Structure formats: C-alpha cells, structure tokens
Picture 1: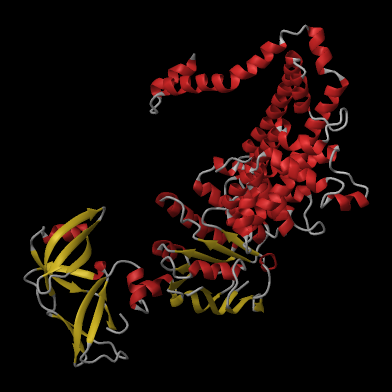
Picture 2: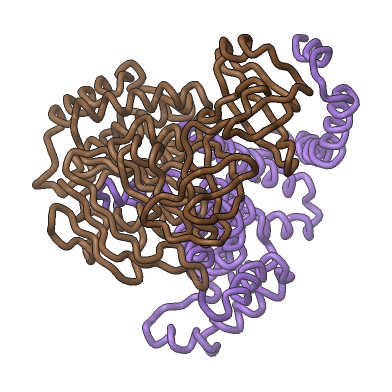
Length: 355
Length: 279
C-alpha cells in the first residue's frame, strides 16, 4: 500500500509548519522523515495519519484519496514517541485493544484474539511479558509492545513518530537494527520521523530531509549523504567545514587552495562557499603545500580508531575540523602547535546565495 | 521495631522529630476529641446505649443520612465528572466564571445555602411552585435533604477530577483512535479507567462531607421525625435535652459507620490504583 502526499500545507497561526510538501512512499518501503525540530516532519506524519488536518493538499493511500477520511478509516498503525500504552491494561490487553474494539460482526472470537496477540508478542520477542503492566517494562520493551499493538489491527501502513527518541543510545541502536529486520520480515509500508541522521541513514530505504516546513531532498541514504542537494542537507547530515572564497574565471579561490566551479553553477566574481566533511580532509606534512591550506594543530582527541583534530588556518585564523584514522595520525607524528597542510579530497561548492 | 531502624539509612533529616510531631498533632486534633466521645458513651450501661442507638427515630435517621449521602455522592460523581470534563476540554465564553462558581458551595456558609435552597424549593418558591404542579415536593422531604447534599458535595468531585483530566495524555486517545476505537469506546476503555482513582477520591470526599452536613440540611429537611430527620440533628436534639451520653452514643454509631464506609472506599481505591499506577 503506497502513501502519497500532495502539496500539503498546514499553518498554526503565523507559523507555517508544513509548506507545500509532496512526497511518495512506495509500497513496502521504509522511509525516514528527517529534519531538525520544528521542521514540520511530525506534523506531516500526523496529517498522513489523520490525527491532524491539512489546510490544503491531498493524502492518497494506494492511489485513493483519503484526505477526508477519519483516523479509524485510514487504517494506519501509529507508534508514538512516548509509547502511549494504556497504563491500566496489561501488555496482553494493550495488544488486544484494537481487536476488542472492533464492531461485533467484525470482532474475532476470543481464541482468535488470543492466538493473534500471542503471535504478535512473539514477533516482538516479548511473549513472556504478556501479564505485566506497562510501568513494569523498560522503555525499549514498551516501544516494542506499542509496535505490536499497532500491528494487531493489520494496518495498511505503519507510521512511527520518533519511535526511539525517548530511549538511551544503546537501546536505540539495538531497536533500530531490530526495526529494520522486522520490516524485512513483514514488508509493511512504513514512514518514520526522526531527527537523528544516523538512525535515518542506517534504517531507511529512502530519506526525506525536511527543513522549515519544506522538503530539502529525497533520496537513498547514500545520495543524501554523499550528494547533498542543498547546503542545509550538507550541514544537517554529519559535520562539515565551511570555506568561504571568491570565484574568478570559473575557479574558486580559498587561500592557496583553488577549486573549479562545477558546470551549471553560474557564479562569477562573487562569493562562494565550499563544503568539506571532516573525514574528506587530508592532513599532510607541512612541506607538502601544493594546492593546500596551511594550518596549525590546536588540539586533538582520539576516539577509538579515529582521531579528531582541530586546526587553525594560518591565513584567516578560522577553525577547521578534521577526522583521520589513528594509523595515519601516528604516521604523521604531529601534535598540538605543529604546522601541517590540509587538502580536501572531496568537496562541494555552493554559490553564496544558496548558502 | 524495624521501622525505627530504617531512619539510620534515610537521607531525610528529622525522621524522629517529624514522626513525633505528626503523632502528637493527630492525637491532639483528631484522636483525643474522638476518644472523648467514646469515653462519654461508656458512662451508659450497655442496655441504655443499645436503647438510645436503636430507637426507631435514630434508625430512620441513619438510613436517611447514609442513604442520602451515598446517593448524593454518586450523583455528584456523575455530574461532577461531566462538569470537570467540560471545564478542561472545552473553551467557551465565561469559562473562568463557571470555574469559580464551582467553589461556591465550599465558600458559602452552609446556613445560607440551606435558606436559599429552601426558598427555592418551598411550595411557593421559584422552582418549588412548578414542581408542585407535577406533584413533586422537594422542601421538607428526604428529596430536599438529597438536593442540599448534592449542592454541598459538587466541588469535591470537580476539584479532584479536574487536574487528572488536565493531565490526560492526548496521545492515549489518539492511539486508541488509530486502533479503531469509537469515541465512546475511547471514553469507556481508556479515559474512564484512568480517572477512576480520582473519581473515587472525589466520591469519598463528597460522601464524607454529606454525612457530617448539618447547616444546609436542617432548613430544607423540615426535620420530621422518621421522615426527614438527619442523624446530626438527632445528636443536637439530644444535646439540647441535656442527654449528653445519649448524644455521644449516636455519635459513636455514626463515627464507626463512617469509618467502615471510608475504609471500604479506600480499599476500592487501593484496588484501582494498583491497576492504574501513575506512571
């Protein structure tokens, strides 16, 4: 079952939460809606679920207009950041809830409900917790129960609002790998909201990057990370260094370093900004200064197999962050105060207007 | 005693002092006056005690007092819940005023409430004259007692349930809606069980207040022996006849009955709390 949003707009007073957003989720896909807080991603998800109404635009499920259908008619499974489990019900009763509230003629028999709930609890690997109450479970367990509860009514699509946002880092990592496996198992069209870029890149088939109510880029995790469409995506997905320079005759000059302006970008005799990720910076001995920037190491920190180095440009005094592996760092034999040359391996140039 | 050893491990200071103060204060304010009632009663022989507490007039008054109080608390639980719900969930002009009005029965001297209600419901009163045509008599009947008790008990339910409704997570209702529950099912299966402990507390408070209510009831009840005479009035009457021991005997019956009922409601509350922990 595919999901399509067409030109969705939603404002809260003067604040435009979702500004003319269109997106499509193909059947069976797992898509991440990624953006900083206030980017409109949760509002969009709630509009798709029918928990919120759009000021204009259309929502389609499997090509059929569902804009005016109520929450129940849309048959979406919704998972909330803070689980929203019913506290006065056991885990079993929580999962059975959606089946028990069905109209009498559609309601499965008691035994059927029982079989189904137990099967779902097995699916989320928590069948041994059936008789507990939510407050007796850990956060990760609660969220898995919430997921089982949402799946009980056999939703056509699954919508997850920051599903791992309230969990600690380790559990979050485990659960997102688990969600990926679960999705590979049941193939339900899923859309999840997150502000954690790592989570989006790791779990999703496709990432929709949102900012200030608009879609910045839609693409596979590789595409959005390696080929960001806008400076915002560059900065939001991972760390980045900004180098400000000027463009003359089709080449941008940043200190002693020169880069060609890509075709199709018409910037001339104007400011430009070059974006370089810390791990795309090469650190060289100071003597190797051809087509490189001179910088002084101010401090460094070893994090496992990687070393993060803070440098200060000799010409402008701006700070540069670089990340290299430990072997290379030891090979260079550098420390705080030493001068080195810095050369980007990969970069991307945007006109000053875009940045 | 084990409990006294735990203070060594407690990070809270002043355990001994705080406990001592609490016990002394409770004794002074609550236990000593209550035990005085028991001691005074003990001056009666068993037979005298039995005769005064089982006098037909007294028994009829117990039925009226406890029956009307329970019924009034139940009515307040239902309508108080609705009032609290409307005050939290909807916004309408004059909401703050309505919200303030709820407290009026708290603040109003009970005698004023009693006189006002009597004036309204008497056969020639604003409301009473119309009810009269339907053959309904409120003032000077047990129904009048009920009306007065409903009036004074309302704020207890509203004020205990209101904050809980305010704290209800909208997500719970949304989750239920996405699972296909109808509005009624959401209320009955999700919201109501969450409100139950607070509602029971409100019920208990309204009931306790109603059992002890005197001022507002004596005016509207008419105080006909065997029909509309409440137990507190019996006590007053006995006192006025200098039958102090007889008065305390009836008081003791009331005390024990109230205590047992409150204990029972507390047990129910404990049950529903156990099933519905706050987090």
